[in-house]
Amino acid sequence: LSAYKEMHGNTNVPAKSPAFKQLNNWVNNQRSEYRKFKKNGKAYIAKERIQMLESIGFEWEALNIGSPQRNESVWNERFNELKAYKEKYGRTNV
Image (cartoon, helix red, strand yellow):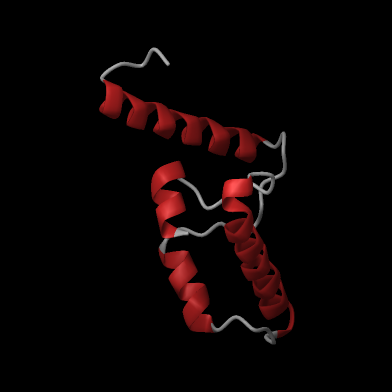
């Protein structure tokens, strides 16, 4: 997850990407367990793991398609991809 965030600038792993299917499932499980933890304090996720996820800026709520936050997240992700492309190829003409 840390590597994904480093590469994409967020922890919103796409659900439909075959390359990230397992990571997306894991992220969704963490969010589900966190909701249970917040509701009644009983879940399979420990406080230490919550803290670890929060230390990398984990986003506990998945962003809905079309929401202003999602649009901002996607824009930032694409911008980071463009920066990486420019660093590799020395241009922004993709």
